[in-house]
Image (cartoon, protein in one colour):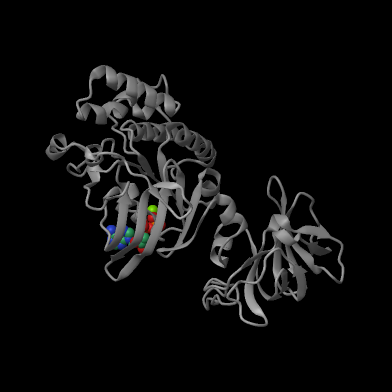
Length: 417
Ligand code: ADP
Ligand code: MG
């Protein structure tokens, strides 16, 4: 179960739960205190090893719930104004990481710095972060305008400033003219826009978004993905986004962090992650892949499926003398269907499915591996083919626990676990 999505969107930096309802109000303490970071002399951007500026540093974060360690030594940087996505299957610790950033959860150990200052000692309502959850809890008794204005009213912002800022926020989320609508008169997608407007109205430095499009249908989700990305650029706010949907992550992100079981598997741009997955887990999780065990005994040459191919990678620096076992990834769209031939991998097409843009074929390779191919031209089931690929479409990875020949076969289902 995803715990935080059952909560609500905090419209201001302060909230509390009243009764059983998702409701919030500003604490008395908050009225007295000014924002921690406003009182600091000057925001301090940090440099990482690539020389770029980042505003948040997360180092060695660990978190357990009872006996279950859900975060293991989580370490990454968040650059200023970037769209960073935590991507991984349900239960891998994405929301927990976000909740620690938001201040809704504590860490067992580790450091989180925001502009050089320890963020973990700052109470949730005073962090320059705002959170958008999957289930936008809007006030049903308020119209769109008042839902967005709510946080500013609590802060006793002047009426004309409220007007200007609400209008601006509604324009940003594409809801100009919707101010008078009641919440039950708008669609799910529009409700999520109101939730976003409510979060950006406080002009947070960082917006935390936990599967915010999860409740929307596919078409609306695709539209909102593009709009959110545009919004992020326009606003110049750093977005930290959580999703289990790899396509969503690839579409929107500047940086993707792939997680599994509370461990970071890879950090990189969408292109890096897709084209150069670090291990078989990432390759498998990000899109369809053919992942096979291979061997390298010299630079720029790899043997798999019983044949040796030219590739663009040298051996790994730590490779032992002689053969070095590796994993090989070839994306289905990178395979060319050719005539059967002795120097190709040959096989028999065993299934053909039309996927809208391309056909997806499964081919029983003579090497014993079932290959997936995506091609705009179909080949009939039962036909014999030969397969080729370009050297730079052969991705070589180090062996890991996720390697195809190291994964255990589940006795129950008889499939690779
Ligand atoms: P994700 O967002 O990636 O789906 P979460 O961060 O929500 O994953 O959860 C990671 C793991 O921690 C899961 O196994 C989940 O059941 C567990 N977990 C999360 N919050 C709590 C909690 N408050 N108490 C106990 N276990 C929790
Ligand atoms: Mg979650």
